Length: 511
Image (cartoon, rainbow, N blue to C red; front, side, top):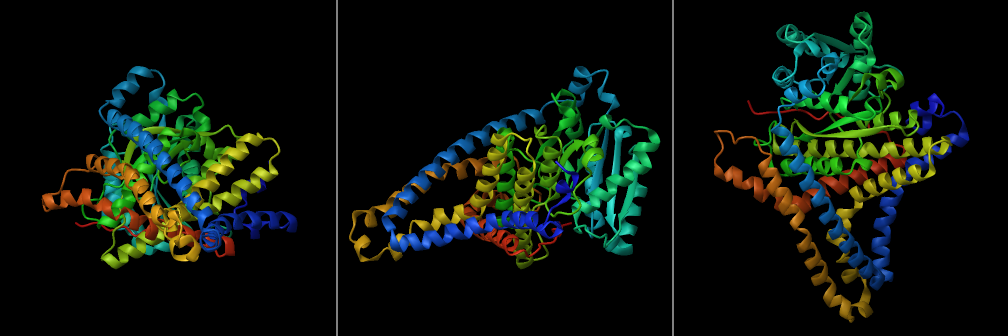
């Protein structure tokens, strides 16, 4: 595996015409599969409606079984999360790893662009409130030169307030317009880690294997025992230096203030990550996560790609020849639900955030190209990861549309011969019954979302609490408007070679 292939994130970066065409073909695959599915849904509904009906029945049954399986994963993960919240992890850490735990340092990167001081301050306050020795915590506030003098002013105020609390509090300024970089979180974090290595780690001669990096979004507020849980899992791991560590993101920072559709989308993201913690063979780093500093020393941090949080896992996986994994922590960090100054801006921001997340499909050509180039990785592992990624992004873009609309297409397009058949009258009732049964998954999610809520603010009454349950009736709409549509949008852009830059989600909270 050549080092250059791990740095290639777009087809236009490849000089060899043959290799460039191969990478370009892989970029087309996600969008092509989604659009082909939608085209076939319409065409076959008109030309072969009976075939479509049998496909619908099979698809709905498979989806029902999948919901049942994922609900079991969700329940198991939820139980572990609730159990972990009750444990005194620092005490457990000191007991289980008496001689080694105190050697571990934590670097916490907080990349910011134009967020207000209240957002940054609340995250730093959460770090201060963590039950872990502050003399082992290095906080890096990574600002952007593009943020201007106001960003520097806010950063200095935060530093003055917190620098005496932690072992080190470093401000880094990521220069703008570095050639080849994608302006965004990944390039900012890459610059910040280079600086913390140069300014702190190397001069103090801290062993790389004794450092864990926690790459947080600026709105991430770790729960009190996070670093104790992380350190315990790091020391317990069979392959600590070949593992990333993933908490469960819960979007509780402003959950009571956000509109219903934003709350559903945020909670759905939480529950998906809870399910993935139980499916460790599919678990990939997401949003806020942690990894050994040795990984950064070996491969750096992705600076040429939008979806850096997942790409860093795949880059490590490829660099270490498949000897890399994600350890689930079953422990939460709290983040912001999308909320803007008004409802329309919230809708726009929510769509853009989901589209940026769906742009993670750019990892498909990255992974496939490196699988194609790497002859040492086991073929079965290549196939397994490829199928999981393809199915995941395909489901993201088309499953909701197939579930809610495909059953009706043969009825409208099937023609007179089909209209006179028994299936014409029975299929709506059958699919409706299957979907009704599958609603139990939504009921489970509604109950869990309520149990994960922080205390209700005094300015809200019981009606607001009731809305936290009733909001789940909007799930079918959100799955399409903020699931399928932005996913198809992102995949189509990738297919057509239209770049999607990093769009930072605006942070807004009621004061």
